[in-house]
Length: 314
Image (cartoon, rainbow, N blue to C red):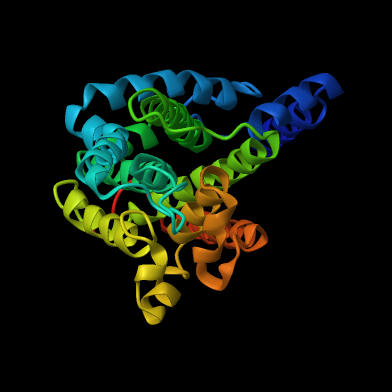
């Protein structure tokens, strides 16, 4: 009996080791395939295409939320109209001793509202939106879908860019045709506007993603985010002339990016004579670029470290 068992074992061993090379390679390939996770892999470049398609979805969702449209999209336009009408009786700003020259109230407040719009579109919009999606389980469901993380963020970033550009166009049209504000004609000023805007919107977007980790629930998101955004607007030269603030508050405001966005926008839309009213008496555009770049990097690092599909304490 033992001899038969040995013979059988030897035959089995021979049948395993004497396989042809092609079959051996096929078995090895099958063994190296990872277990099926239920989530199909995406083709190369599919994440970018999904992100581009998601931009349209995000924009539609944005404009379907009436409160969000008012407090982020229309709010700067409304505030520009209020300040322009409320202070129109005080005359022009920056007039000569003989009463000539100067600019209208609408022209004076336009750059500040541009900067505020960038902050609202990026920081407030994304911080509240992502915190709400995290709270109601939307992000948890997306984390279990084939949608890559990059596609999700491309959709959000695209939505911010599209709606912000629309907001800028609306502000310029209102300023020009409702309040007769003379817009810049020099190409150099519009070039400055382009890089200040792009740096500003990127910075605001990544800071909005990072700030979305702070609210514990979607219901508390507006209570956490809006006061931060509102205080920054008041101390950064949006609603008040920056040099009206005490020196210590100017120094505090200079830490944050909104002050630099507003300063860059003032260099575009205000006459050169207003440069003397800036902190240090200059537009300091290199300082604007450096400050926004630093905050963009800080925002990216914070967004990478703090973002979660679900809260840690869930």
